[in-house]
Length: 364
Ligand SMILES: Cc1cc2nc3c(=O)[nH]c(=O)nc-3n(C[C@H](O)[C@H](O)[C@H](O)COP(=O)(O)OP(=O)(O)OC[C@H]3O[C@@H](n4cnc5c(N)ncnc54)[C@H](O)[C@@H]3O)c2cc1C
Image (cartoon, rainbow, N blue to C red; front, side, top):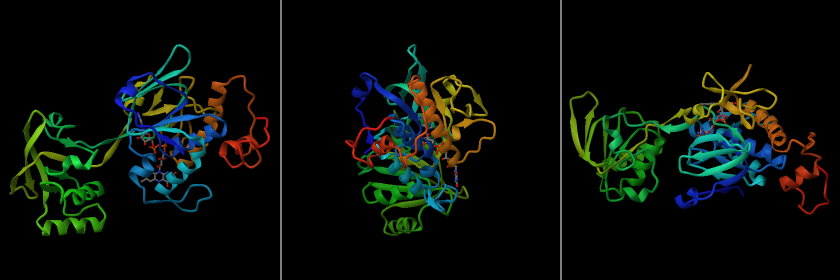
């Protein structure tokens, strides 16, 4: 099984984790990189700012079919991610999820220090940036003075549902997250107001129907309109002023906690600040090693650029295979490299766990 790490703040502040390789980004290309490194006997830690692996496939189009993955005539985007996770399982990568990588710096001994927003620090022999179109950030509520409330009484994700029990709750948005949490919390909150600027919802029809039943039963209210202002002091909310569509109605509603689900947008963010050569918001790499302008730092998938680059999943898979060989050479320059087939290589089959670990030794 792959290991998902949830360190305490004290553990994160302690000594850095030593890693053979670190992959930044757990989209389809980062996940396949675990596999390609694993085949060559290299272990990986993988970090993503999202709470789950899968990148764009999981975040933007999980239910859509993909038709151009070799040998899979049709494959759902989330299904592809699940299959990649399954394929990478034998290599026991360590996942650090829900934390953006903010720093990447070369050290004097040729290694790299990687640090996340939560304070996790890793020292790696090589780094693969598989950051796609950047890390996904929640779209924020655009109201003056919003910073005062963010993280205290205005939230863009639910960490613990019980935080909202018994509270006057305002939920903003019209997609699956907004409607799922509305339905889940309507009977737990003291009061619940859902505000969405259009009559149509993007959420699953069954969830929308359930929300309408809750409104009819007097368990919550739904306003078709927008938030005009939030009021409170020292980060604690007291009430919101909402305006119905058409502009004629304004309504004051009590609010202690506000959940905003306006979707996510990708932000290149910290990747642009690591001193690597960029071209139109992508990392320049060569097409032999997929190495960036800093030896030992590689880039694969949508984040990289080179002549003829096509932002397709299958391009990222090819890049991951070649980068793995280049990383092995970077870490072990004396080691002879030769191509082996998974079909016939006993050492690869042992690594994959398809032949017993105590099978007769095979030269690599
Ligand atoms: C609607 C849609 C349909 C598509 N259909 C197809 C298709 O049919 N066929 C096809 O080949 N391609 C398709 N694509 C494109 C495909 O999804 C991308 O090419 C692919 O997701 C790229 O994978 P990736 O691993 O490089 O990056 P991503 O999937 O973007 O994953 C990158 C990950 O890196 C993380 N990250 C970024 N910066 C940081 C940081 N600083 N710290 C921590 N984590 C970070 C992000 O959170 C993200 O999870 C489609 C895209 C969309 C939007």
